[in-house]
Image 1 (spheres, rainbow, N blue to C red):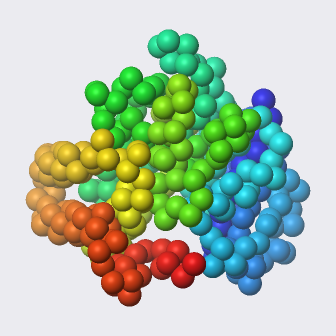
Image 2: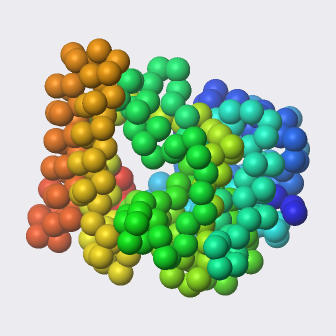
Length: 308
């Protein structure tokens, strides 16, 4: 199967160059790397001349949208499989693309076709202990196939997938209409829900590994989870029947136990503060329609989203 990689970028730097270099060394070759870059002034073409399979399409910041930008990149592809990545996701080894493709050879328990395969995210070297556990919680060592019948067992996790590293069967992706456009967040989960409801399967490939983590401050967590709440409010067809609060509380409880087991008791107050900011941001996002527009823009991480 032919493979293209689509990457939205903004202010790309040394990490992005390293990402391109690692994609160049994959055991399964990448046909084209299609970059949708926000603001041409930040793109330095001389840094990328050696990547012969790289093509870039520039958009203005006012045009950026999590769903639309990726749809744009995928529209330029004719490959069998399109891998969506972010510009700060680092392939952990040379087997990333191979491991993603292996996921498409699997099927659901009743023969459901796998429409997408998402990879495992590992913490970076500078990652906090609490964030390390969050990566373990969301991306366990054991892979699995998910279908809509897992909803009673997995709840919101049934729809979980991440465009930090996620491969799609391009023709089926386009058949289902691609990502919902004008999405502030969660375009990947919204598509996964649509695909599962259409009778397809989603594969989590634990062997397809990228290094990707953030050490957000409490205020950044509030902004990020505000946008998460907005996306859930805007898509009740996906999220109304599978509330995510329970999963969030479970993560906090297990992280406290994890930190206690590591004897990192001094990190627990920070975890509580961060978790509180996450919850406040999320609840405000869920009610964003009742807030003044000025306040909504201030609370959001993606402020330019509200300018359109």
